[in-house]
Image: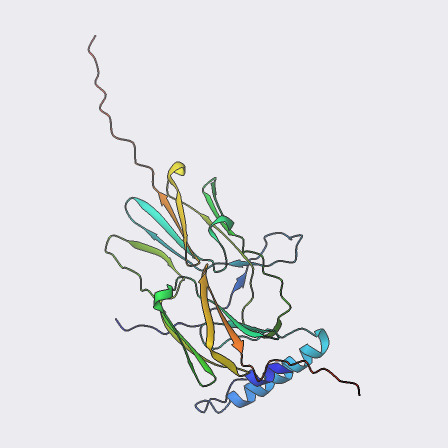
Length: 152
Length: 133
C-alpha cells in the first residue's frame, strides 16, 4: 500500500510518538481491510493536504482560504516540497469590536516528501477559490512504459 | 506582535440540518464577525466555493450563509493521502441589530466570503410643534 511511504517520520522530541504512529498504523490497516477505502488521516501540520497520482503526474491539493498567491512560497529541494506562507493579520481598529474570531492568522510551513521522482522543470501551482493545486509531472524514468512483445 | 504558527483545525460537520438526498457533507465554516458603528461584517472561510455558489439570506433576523462547492472533476487519479474532506458549507446566525436588507453586500476572495450588513439608520428625532388653536 502506497500510503506507508508517507508515514510520518518519528519525532525525537516525543518518546510516545512512535507508539502513537504504530497504533494509527494498525487502525488504518484494520479499517482498510474492512472498507477498502483510503483511510482518512488527520494532519498534524498546517495545511492539511490531499495527494493524488495517476500515470503521468502527482497532484497535491491544500485548502488555504484567505492566503494570497503573493504570500505563498513553494520550493522543491531534492524530493521534498515545501509550502510556506502566511495569512494577513487582522487590521485591528479601535472602533471595531469583534464578536467572533475563529479564523486563525499567522504563518505556516510544511515539508512534504514526494513518493516518486518528479521532473523539477514542470511544476505548476494554481490557486483558485482558496484551494492550492500543485501538479507535478513524474520523471521520465518512473512513468509506466509499455513494452511490446515481439514474436519471432 | 510575533506571528503565530497556524494550526490544523478539524472541520466540523453541521448538526441537525436534516438529511440530504445526495451523500454530500455540510461543514461549519470558521467565521470572524466584527461590528462598527455603521455595519456588521461577517467573514467566513469557504475554500472551494466560487462566487456563484454562495447563497446568503436574511429572514426573520436569521442570517443564513450557504456555500456550495464546485463539483470535483472526475479523474482516474488514485488517492495517496487524504487529510481533509471536501463539502458544502452552512451556518446560521441570529442577528440582533436592525439591518438594512437592501444594502447587504457580499464578496468572495481567495475562498474567504465577506458579508457586509449595514445597520439601519435610526429614525431622526422630529420635533412636533403643537399648534395653539
